[in-house]
Length: 272
Image: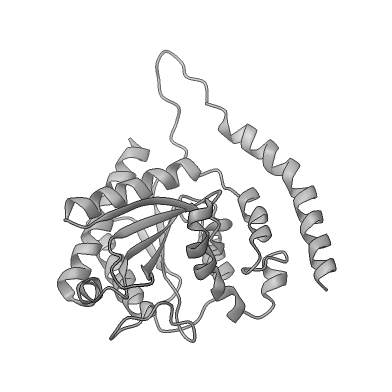
């Protein structure tokens, strides 16, 4: 079975790599400009999909008195409501509104099917010791060795899905070699994803949060995104101070306003 899986990986990479390279060359070309006139807008922000991480039998990280899946859902729903209020005309969709388990590949495919212009996945972090704090935002890309642990932790949710090998072309979240596949699936919105992630981190810092920066990882929930897509870690579950902050109405409101400000700034920058 392992031999067959390795063959499938090699075949996938062999046939996909030339197409990916050609795609990257074509989409990286700068559109011509005439008399200093900027090129037409590639798109406008009309639909935003918000993904509350984990759910159902997948609880995510655990704090002293809460679960990641519940905090992520609370923040996601509040974010959607505030976006509708502050950005009239923008449609907001959710991958889940209740405590239910949804396969990772289905989440981003929902966004693709809706022709979403932004995909945002809300998560809470965790690290040994309980002293880590701050926020970080992740974009899909070639991961660094120091970031692999977090990527594997998030992708471990795949093991709860039926037929995960078929859905992810033989991807094994416990096999570092499998990340080669996801690294080939970089989407054309990488630059905009990084821009959105940077704006989010800037807004967190403005409100006094610690920024742990922008990371590039091969996360399953971002790999197939056909739009700017980020996963933002809003705090550490096993840090009692941050857990209390994320559980509080005031903390959730601050996080939501940070994200709305970042999204609004991103929208203005790509539409002007």
